[in-house]
Structures are given as C-alpha cells and as structure tokens.
Image 1 (cartoon, rainbow, N blue to C red):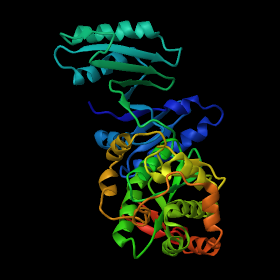
Image 2 (image 1 turned 135 degrees about the vertical axis):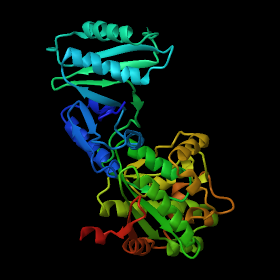
Image 3 (image 1 turned 180 degrees about the vertical axis):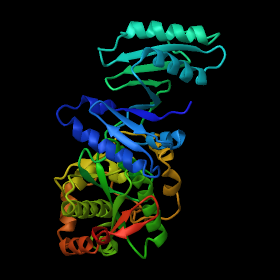
Image 4 (image 1 turned 30 degrees about the vertical axis):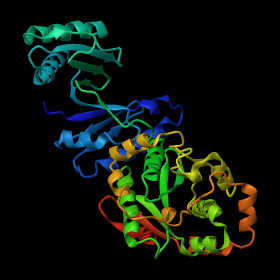
Length: 401
C-alpha cells in the first residue's frame, strides 16, 4: 500500500489550554527540522492533529525520523479518501487486503469527529466490516488484540484510513519549556540528562570544562561528538567550552585535597551560572544521581548548591546506573562516552574525597583566595560553538552574518 500522508497524534500537548497552539507550533518546527532531508514533504498542523504529506517521499524513512521527535505520542501512515461510502468501502478493502495474511483477525475502530456524516460509528462498523468479511476469505473479527486494526477517522474535510499505530517519543516539543544550561562532561550520565531534559521541552545549551594540557584535544572532540548526537534532536546545539586549567591548579594549591572536589564543583557551578545569565537561560542541568559518586551525596550537593539560587535540574537523580547506561545505549551516546579520554572531572579526583563535606569548611578554605577574577576570565575566554549533526561547527558570531 502506498501511503500519501502520516497522521500525528499529540498526546500530552492535548492537555494544554489556551497556549496549545504555541506547543503545536514548536512541534511543527521540530518535525520540519527533522524532515529537512525530504524536500517534497509538506507539514500541516491544526489544534488537534498534524499531517505529514509525503508527496512521493519514502514513507519508511520518514517514519524512522518521526520516532525520535519529542511531543509526538503516536502516528500512523494513512490515506485520505472522499466522504463517500462506496469510496470508503473500496479504499478500506485495499488497505486491509495489502496487509492481510491467511488466518489473521481484524477489527474496525471508527472515530466520527464530524457528526454530519451519514453513518454513525455502529454504521461504519457494520458497513465496512461486512464488506471486508465478504471480500477477504478466511478473515475473522477479533475485538481484543486483533492482527489488523483499521482506524477510520471521519472529519469535515475527508476520511482518513490507517492500520498501523507507531509509538512516538512522547514528552513535549523541544523549546516549549524554556532554555537551560547542561553541564556536559565526557561521561555517560550528562548526555542522558540532557536528552531527558529535552524530552520535557527544554532547549539546552551545553557547558564543558576543558583543562589543557591535563586534558587532551581528543577529550574535547569527544564532547563535541556527544553534542552532535544531542543536536540531532533539534538540528543544532550550542556548546560553550570553558578554559578551566588555572582554576583547577589554584584549587589544588589553595584547598585541602579532600575538599578540592567540592570546591571544583562549586566553581563549575558559578561559571555555568554566569554563562546562563549571559545567554538568558533559566536553569542548570546536571547528570547527578544520588550517591553515585562522592560529589553526589546529599551532603555534597548541599555544600555545592550554596553558590547559586538558580534552579538545578537533575533528571537522573533517582535512577540506577544500569538504567542510565540503557538509555545512553538507546540514544547512541554510550560508545562515545566510553572513549578512553579523560575530562577535567576525573583527572583531578583526590585519593580520598570528602563524601560528607561541611558547607562552613569549604567556605573557610575558599576565603583565603579571591576566585572572582579567575571566574570572570574563564567566562570571558569561553569558546562557543554551534554544533550540527552534519559535522559543521561555526563560531557564535559567524551565525549572525
């Protein structure tokens, strides 16, 4: 069967009120970005439904792209037919016959959005069901879990037929929930946290801390590749690369070793917050999970969080490592994260980090040195890249011309 369109169902967007159209527009933008490689496609959106008009493009390839778009609950390849009973009977027979295999069962699921159509839902069931049973030998009706479920949706402009319901990624369209800064290391957790945040509609910009010569260019490439993977969701991603060497060396010289990790995280948070202000973000996202490492105990988070009043979002906070790894595998970041190139979070880890640091103590240790000029310099010297899936990166300023 050659489908001419794909019907998209909104899911959670349907629960929105007066601002639903804003969410629909964000989703339409996401769909158009994802389907850019298909020049003949046209996207039509209404308050209740969205349609992708294929215009000869490969249906299976388009389906593969739609599966990963946040905001889509489910979708179905469909055909559009006239509001005519005889046309409906013939088209229904064609679509079911193209899928039917001997011994399979079917049912009809009618939806009569337009009550002016001459058949009600029972009438559609009886008329179309009888026509199928008459013309397809061996086919039987099964109400629960049939092999083929023919969905017939009667709307004012036409009737839509589909037999396959494909689950979408769910969530909310990217960009519908505001902007947040993702603290992106080279590890497994932070890319997954970014993915989960994007699923809830957040637009994210990534912040990575780079400490040459202690961290190599390969570790930087690793983070760029992780950003590239995340950029596939929305077509591009901004990555801020912060020079962190001077601050880390100063911490090593000024802060007792067992508190150095706590202080390092505090400085990272302060810098990320400054970048957030500069780029008009509303929150900071981390890949922390309670108790996973020393800096992720509640005591550590309590001591670290003091440096900002900005909301800290932790999508993975109660997740097991095995669950995080599973998602990393699904979104294709696991192999990149496992590359053996260390980032600045791992190379300066003390032998015995404090798992229950005291806020007062880290304040006391940091009071002997003025970190503000170093933080200001790091923010000023931050390199900003726009990462795209096609391997193209540009400076932030080149995007303006």
